[in-house]
Length: 187
Image (tube, rainbow, N blue to C red; front, side, top):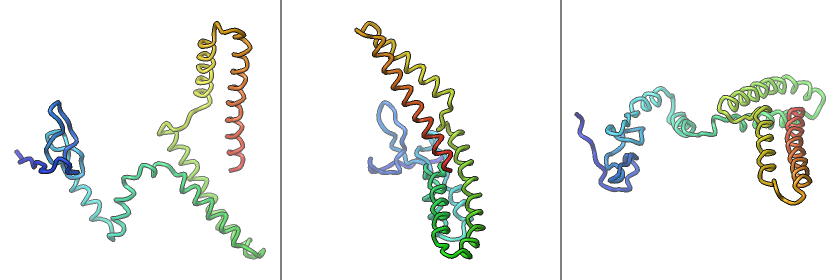
């Protein structure tokens, strides 16, 4: 059995995050984990060191550390925007007809990259549950209509108020759909 190391300072950032009725655990968490061995913490240090060992430079290791914990990397929005900026800068830099003709192959390559990024980003959003489909939106709309109707029953002039609210909600749903269509057409 391994000897558990205890923290000497209660604010030690290496302190195990597990808690019990008597308070937070006083053991030192395993390397690369937030928990000690007693609380199912696993020493991830060797795997992390192995991954770092295989990189060529310290700069690459630093980039890996910085990017590996970034939740925004699950999104390709910045890469899509950057590709669009690159396309625009290539087109702006071409002043003469010859430069414009030469720029088209570069632009075409970036457009193909952009298409792949958009498709992959859409697939990622879909797999992460970040996209809402038309059927889900329609279902939500029906639920909202039902909530409005149920809450306003019995008010004076009930039907006129409900009709006005539902008309406004319909307009809002359609404007969202139209904005999405316009965005898709502009791509």
